[in-house]
Length: 227
Image (cartoon, rainbow, N blue to C red; front, side, top):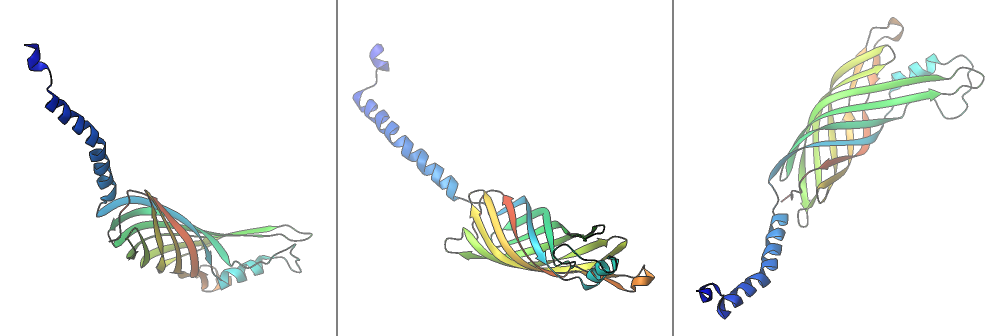
């Protein structure tokens, strides 16, 4: 009876062979699962950047707010740069994505005056919007150039001045997929401008956030090839 449960030499050989090839089967399955990528994904995205602009009426207002005969300690009084933060949700397919975004821009200015009180100004913009990108794959399709654009609605504020208007955005850059981390440096052009006529002393005060911008988008999600 015991011999019925005793493995034969042939059976032992088959078991040994199965044990020897099992690691290679598991490794092959693991590589196939890593190489297979989804054809669509939804994920949060965020980023930051620096913009360059010249809001003429805003700069004239800052200049007019300074005391007569002032002398600045260093620098200049004009706004020429702002900081940008943005975040949203992206739906992506192979070579196309669409994002709902919220953008916040802030342009602070501190004027340090010799023998006088320093003055500070804060010119900001809040802009919800939607944008889309088309991707042009590079080599294996893991990385890609992209070009796109979108529309938004800008709410701008400086002291008691407020204005809002629709605007547009054009952008281009390069998408780097590093495992589950996606890095997208970009350059963009933003058009945003509106008029506030509430102050008689500043008739048709133009609040302008039209600018060139450089920055980076960041996201974490499963890698998806662009082709």
